[in-house]
Image (cartoon, rainbow, N blue to C red; front, side):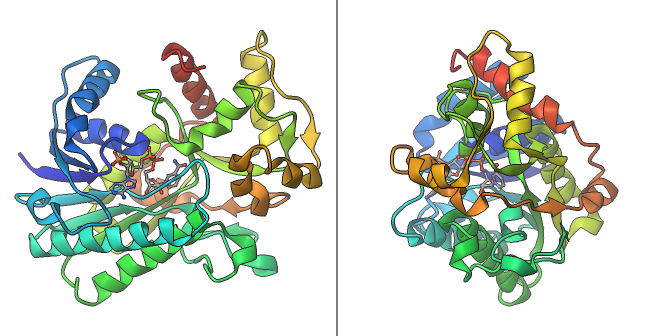
Length: 338
Ligand code: NAP
């Protein structure tokens, strides 16, 4: 059986990617900061899949050299998804940037040393669409790169993603030559959660469903379903023509107000926020709700993208954004989290 190493195996996107790999007959080894999560992870994967799923889980931390070489033993493909994606931004941006960049390099170096054929790395649309200021193209594609030095149009998270992706490509063009790389650049990822321990991106539905915002900030989000993101990771690993390429993954852009309208229509019995929040009020609310700090640079911005390449090369036939939103919410309700 062909073995695939999935880093950050306990994560939202990684869990779906693991199932997509297992369903195609791959043997999966995962990494987590603590291998003691194995039992819980396998129970979660099995419950979601409706059949027994058992993967091996080993310890590897993005911030330490320990464990990476052993994790790569016997592996043909690397899926590198681990990266800090916090609910609240840290005071020091390096708390995100260093693990993201150094962790990617640790994983790629170990993959190269082990003779891995191809690495797929989960970057983000954050590596494409940020730091442009007034010069941002109307429609962004894979030829575009974010500028991490323009702090007014970035968060520590968006900077961490572009800095890590650049470091990965530099490595592949230098000491890592011979190891193939394909990069996935998803917009905000929604879709079914397998457990209550969910990625920060699901706050797009949990914040309004829990009525945590008085009204909707003037924000727009590209949305993609996690099931499409998982299939894209597998296709980027298998398709010869995906090597050396980056792929934007996204169905379409919706405003937060439109997301709210979808939720209000689907859950008429719930008390949900209504109307739009003026930008000045959002800035003030960051004092009581620090999660909102991440979105301040986003207010009033619209970052459009072209997803043609992911359809053409990876064969993605997008699940509509509305279905991704409702799948997130329904899964969290079923799990007793909402
Ligand atoms: P998630 O559920 O929070 O998963 C992140 C994973 O990273 C966790 O499993 C965590 O593993 C691991 N991790 C964090 N810090 C680590 C460290 N120092 N050492 C080792 N592992 C560490 O998030 P996700 O949404 O699935 O994100 C997966 C990837 O997709 C990330 O690279 C993220 O940047 C990218 N992405 C996400 C979105 C989105 O909207 N969700 C959009 C674009 C790109 P443990 O805590 O178990 O060790």
